[in-house]
Image 1: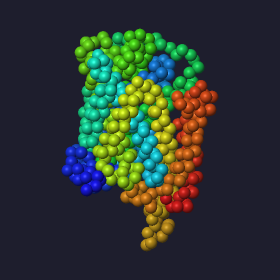
Image 2: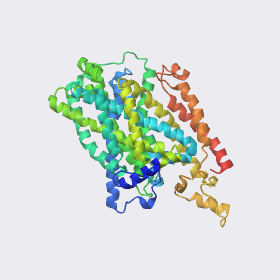
Image 3: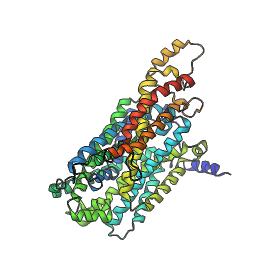
Image 4: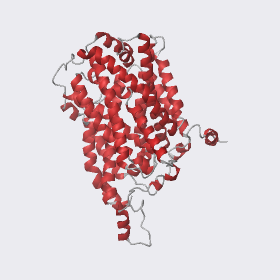
Length: 511
């Protein structure tokens, strides 16, 4: 018996306990929503899911960097950070609309844009993104346990605990993930409310004490804006993964608005709180010492320093749940990206790849545990670069080509012999579902991805010239006080390059 055969045998035995479905499409008849009550329950779960996913320490951690790394004061951090983050929310919400209509994971629907070969690279970049977040979550969790244990629990042990718990839940499947995330958001949100009360009442006067050391902070402001945009926009690589159980008839605007509101509100909630903590630390020596010694864990613990020590430790431990909930999502979705790489890898059960992903980010977290701010400040904008290109291509495909030129998709929607070409065009014009989701795995009918590849390649060129990272500062960025504008220029290039090449591709190849 081969290894694959053994894995299939194990999958049959554990099916029902552990989700064995991989990147396969969930057809409309298999979505198990039979009544209004079941649909309402599904909506409640997905709302709780996004509150748990977006309203945790992962989102808060980026806002800490405004004062602590970029040197911005409280007002600048709030204004720049929130606006950037809100823009990213629209990106993530738009990507989510693909879930119910397709029944496919986000990166599977990307095959209709990038083709079956280029999408492998896109999936790889997406995996890097969720791995980066998992590394951040694991390090922060380790710092929290190290701090509240009085340095008795080593940082590496705390990281190991976070990774282990995250993997166990992530293997259970989408139904269990939605339920777990829904319940986890309740205690975490309550603790954040208590942190608002503690920090605001005790340190209100310190919020505005620290001022920008210089008025010439254009580069810092641009880079921080891009960083905060990436906090929420990066959800766009996986948002539709969590809507595949919704009925095919679910309205796009419903999915869009639920995702938008349920990511925007909790992220704003923790973002403001993170800015408060970092701003106080810039003017409070004891808080800064705690941050320098214990990282984010020390800062969180300091926020309750006016309260009972035991109660403060208990509250900080509750916040660990937000890190675990975020890692569960990352581990769950990253496994599908690996299955997209080849047909062979797709045959390996998802829970196996979830374990591989878990081990990878565990190792990276252990190696980079002393470089939290560097990891967060550098990898997050990198994800925003490719996702910005992806969203522009998706918008053009949906709003232009599949709205006005659907009759050119002759491979996806072949002309039947018994009807005329004009009748076929009339039929396609009134077609509500503008994708043939049945061909999600048909390599002969899916797009070749030529237009997406050309747009992507041209955008990468402008990204390298306008990005601002530790390892590379482009010439355009240097002219803007080392400000990062790469993702916005990449969007502009994709907007110009993709349409003419895509039109040529459709006329030449019919897909």
